Length: 231
Image (cartoon, rainbow, N blue to C red; front, side, top):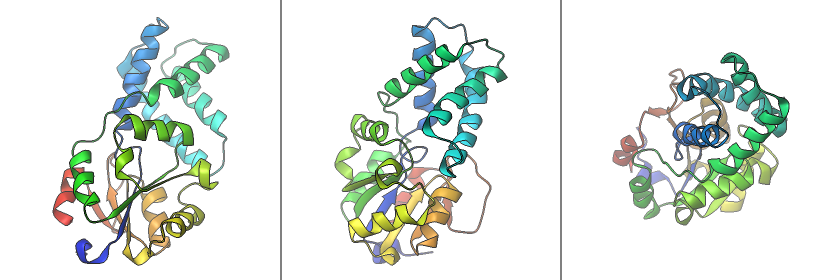
């Protein structure tokens, strides 16, 4: 196992599904919207379909196959179709806008996130690399109390490239002046975070928060608390 204390200077985190508990905050957001708009929707059933649909659309977005607008609209339209809830294009647009507005107001983090960051901040430069939308991600970071921990925050909107594209990692390494051999990426996506970082010569740890298939590309952990013993 790598002796991280002796090797690293910089640690890069993904945000959604890694530090910020996307599934929990997303569910709370939809609960608020459905109550406000008095929609008779079974929240658990909706979330059951929405989460994998959203994940698939993010993959398409990451691969530049769809636009932001298509991502925001189609993930809802497909979910409503799955639960057989009749709606209109206008209503979907309203829900989509409300979702983006409210999502960042919820601030649930994965268990152990703050203690881990407090510990790491003592010895490492900490940064974020996220594929999320610039304005929304910055609000999530601010509202969840994460802002003070990070020196640099890189988003796909800002850089112009999405993980796992090499350019977003190169831009992050260049701006932080980090040596890739002394840099670590921690994220939830094998494709976007892990393979993207490894291709640039960085170290990587896969926080497998949504049960991706096991692999031998790097260390896999199932909770942030597992990381404490490594640093």
